[in-house]
Amino acid sequence: MNSIAVLPFKNMSSDKEDEYFSDGITEEIINALCKFDGLDVISRTSSFAFKNKDTDIREIGKQLNINFILEGSVRRSGAMVRITAQLIKAEDGFHAWSQKWDRELKDIFILQDEIAQLIAESISLTITPASVSEQKTISNTHAFEYYLKGLQLLNSFDHHRANDIIGYFEQSIAIDSAFEKSYLGLCDAYTWLSSVGHVNPMEAHQKVEGYIAHLLTLNPNIPEVYNLVAGKNFWIEWDMHKALENINISLRLKPNFAEAYIYRGLIHIVLGCIDEAFASFFHAERLNPFDPITTYCIGYLYHLTDNNIKAQEFIEKNEKSADLWSAHYLAYVEILCKNGYFEKAWKVISEKETAPSLVSIVPYVKVLYSAYKGDIAKAKEQLLQVEEVIMDNLEQSAPFLPTISKLYLLTGLKDKALDYFEMAIKYRSTPILFALVDSTLDELRSEPRFQEAIDGLPFYLPAPNSSIETKKYRKATLNEKMIKDIKDKLTSVMEGRKPYLNPRLSSPELAELIHIPTNQLSQYLNEHLGKNFYDYVNAYRLKEFQSLKVNPKYEHLSILGLALESGFNSKTTFNSFFKREMGVTPSEFYRKSEE
Image 1 (cartoon, rainbow, N blue to C red):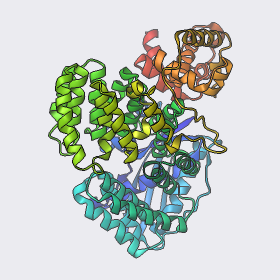
Image 2: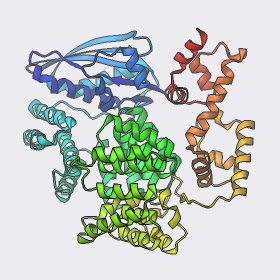
Image 3: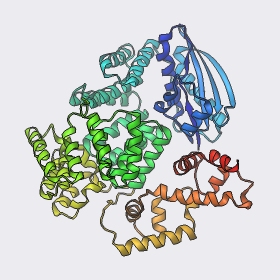
Image 4: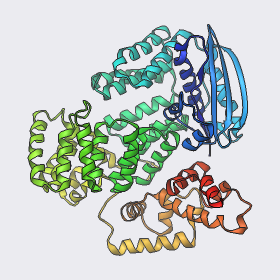
């Protein structure tokens, strides 16, 4: 797979405050490239991490694990804009081409598509747009400028400028009521501002609903709209199959939409499709390696499936790159406790407990800490105090009900745990969506009350004509004989038939080879080997690669050629897995071994 990052274009205008304009043009070029199939495009968050940094192109290529880099500049003068761009090979810093365009600002969207098409053709003739471009001349350039100003503030995540963010987008729409991008900006702004408590969630939801309906009348082919609709299907309606349908439309229109891959991963978790969820999250990570939400989601999924060593690895990556938020705070402390790092867990609790965004979750985290440390009496005492607050306002406390259920389970009170589990479903508490695969609830799974509650959830019903695996990821169903049988069959097939040499090998195909259901294979790999499907298969591919590397028969092949011969489906996948397992890139590893 070919891959590219677009670095923030330099502002060459006479007015230094025009940086919002050059940043906006960069983002528009990224969005245009994201619609090409066969080209991995690094998302804005990760590309902009290198803004104003004098980092060598080759180093950026290594950190982002990409083939190409686009850099350039923007100069605006009145109604005219000049864009220069250089396409660079990340491996050696060699300039593939450079070009300059002078256009009227009203033609900027047409120009960005032209630039994207030229880049794609320069990289590979097999790269094609996933959807037909509908970009047109801008009817009023002032609307575009207000949009870019709103976008710059939105990307700064400065909630103190909330009125300015909304104001810029609204000014853009007041000038041009058909300007789609400003409606999308308002959707993102209200969604974010409601999540951090600066806008009433109900008010935000109503506004976003209205903007979505209007956008669909303006243009039915906007990928971001289907991503927003999928979010509504997921979080509010609990209609997972409709959410999956809409997220797939979004990805069909924009194949490199990292945020949509995160949603697809979350949907797959709820449906019990663990391998598919990991695949979506890891794809999002390739597109946006510096994004804290993505690393959190990967760590959280490892945590749900009780692989807490890997969970800590990813959650700590996230902790270094962003402040903790409540869900991350709770998960991080629990993972540290499960891994026996009580001193470190208490340090995290103490350092963050006064943060305004975490105050509400601190009492729950302290109960969690006491329970895992074995001080059950103290945990019960703390839990009673928490319960008093909960019962005063059940509707407002709904998000915390699944946590209360877990805390009662940790203190040995199953009936109370079941009471709160049932209550969480009644009040539609969001965390309950992940109950199907949450390993911390395993003790409850044999309880009739638990089974009755879980079977009543709408998203466990199979979707008609669905091509995804929707079987429940049930725990505690593999006895010792079954485990040994799966292990023996897997070893025999993997070492004998080498199915991993097929780069498109999937978990259902491997399960079929050893004649077991896909969910049993997932359960065996996750619970008994501590790996997801892709890590398990890629470990065999890496071993094959190392074997071929010392075989004279293959000495004519490059490192990439050997990787593809070993079953890896792309340079990106190979380099990522090799570096994760070996600590260095393949070229660095073999250069050092030859010295």
